[in-house]
Amino acid sequence: MKKELLSMAPHIGIFGKRNVGKSSLINSLTGQKIAIVSDIPGTTTDPIGKRMEILPLGPVYIVDTAGIDDEGELGKERVKKSLEVLGKTDLIILVTTYSTFNDFDRDFIGRMKKKRENIFVVFSKMDIEKRDENLLNWIKNEKLEYLEVSSKTGENILKLREKIASLLKEVITSDIILKDKIDKNDIVVQVIPIDSAAPKGRIILPQEQVLREMLDVNSISVVVQHSELEESLKILKRKPKLVITDSQVVDYVAKVVPDDIFITTYSIVFSRLKGDLKEYIRGLKVLKELKDGDKIFIAEACTHHPQPDDIGRYKIPKWIEGYTGKKLNFVMNPGVMIHQNLEDSKLVIMCGSCMINRKEVLSRIEKAKDKNIPVTNYGVIISHIHNALKRTIKIFDDVYEEYIKIFPELK
Image (cartoon, rainbow, N blue to C red; front, side):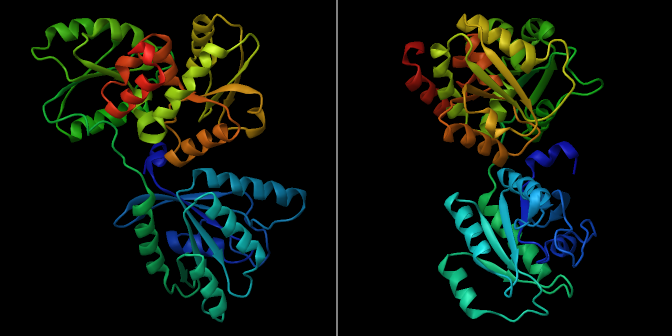
């Protein structure tokens, strides 16, 4: 599995107290010794991830975490690292044993259920543990599914793989980017600017994924830079169904492409795939309320060396200040979203999130909403500022209707 495509694979988190068999279980599931196994509690420190195939589901990403009952200052840091995995996890496997199951496990289960997380209980060490019927009755009353396994003998490991595949089928979301809107032989023009931020010798992941999906549906793909877009439209004998562009040149594309041709941006289609496009549109309302000095939190999903014309650090702040007429305080946070920095923010702006999975995107949105902070993303706010959002979302009927409800004056 390509490293970048981890963002499209279901994530499985292995949780539990120290020394209950988590590392042994992940080694048995993957068929490799990727986690250190020891009788000494607390051997696993930072979360350890492994890509694997679980048939018939396909690629998944499994993460082994440190014991969530770890102690001491270092132990608290380990627990913090482990709990950060929850924001990315589509399925939680709580590993425990009959003899060690206690209120700590019950509390963890309760918290996960309250957050509506998908949780499955695995009783490990079944080769040496005695079954506790009272505990199983409690598990059943909590409406939880469970399985007994032995990493030592391999008993029920295959069943566990099958169970994981079954559970993930119920929780993973659609992988449709645009193919529900594009038919065979439709012409799709992709506008891909090659500037200082473009990786040498290749195109970026969202562009690559859209192009592949368009090939999968047997549409006709035309790929150009924005400087060649106008001439390309003249050459085509049949008008395109859709023009999809990098957000940075959406204002130019909206002017060049006739109104009877749909346009959208890569960031917007990935917002639909992974995030909450309607919530991003609602977040735009706060722009009219901003005052000088207000803090805008820009949450990028990955770290990279900033270029002179970096989209998040330079272009978006410049565009927003030009649009609002206010001098604002922009805080850039690449990588893991730092919760304590959010409190006094007036708006959270997320990137296209191509490098993280949908669960993490939704988790980031919820963290902002929990603090009553509006949230939007790069593609939506750029289109809005350049008066192109009405066009870039029109191909998505339900989103367009929501937009008109929120901004009836723009109908």
